[in-house]
Image (cartoon, rainbow, N blue to C red):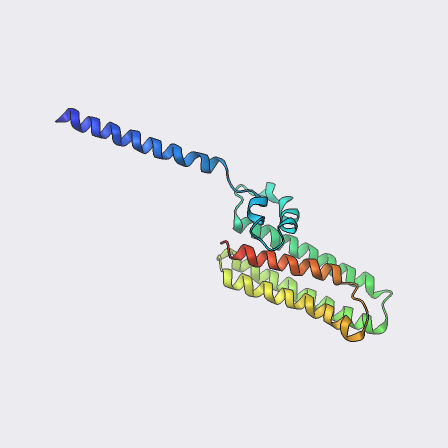
Amino acid sequence: MAGTRALVLLVAVAAAAASCSLLTPAAANPATVPDICRGTAFPALCTDTAGTQAARYTVVDSLTVLEMQVDAFAKRTEAARAHVAEASRTASPGARKALDLCSSLYLDVLDNLGACRRAIGFKDAVTIRATMGMAAQDMQNCDEQFKQIGEPSPMKLFDDTLVEMSENCRSLSNMI
């Protein structure tokens, strides 16, 4: 009887060890930024903006890629604000007024990104999507000002990229 118990125990230990070895390959092949970005609306943009930051993280998952995207979004928004100041120097009076509004809207975007960062800490996907929706609307409102005055928007390329980044953040929020 004792021999049977020892044999059953030995078989149980061997089975547990085998099941652990089945888990090892998955842990050895963690997700990469491009893997995660494939699930976004604009995968190339996601990979380009997040991939450079991946070395700072010990684990790369959808939450960390979302953090990377929000950081890149903030940097791009700051660059857009800098471009507003530059474009204002040579703009018509109507365009200058529109650019002033755009600058204010970009500040709103930065506020929304702050709320988004807090929501990431709580894994609050609903708030993340809401803040990204508001950010996208701010960029669209900036471009709308130029349509109203009949001038091309000097912010269009910035705004298009920022809207795409907001879509990527929304996609990533669905993965957390």
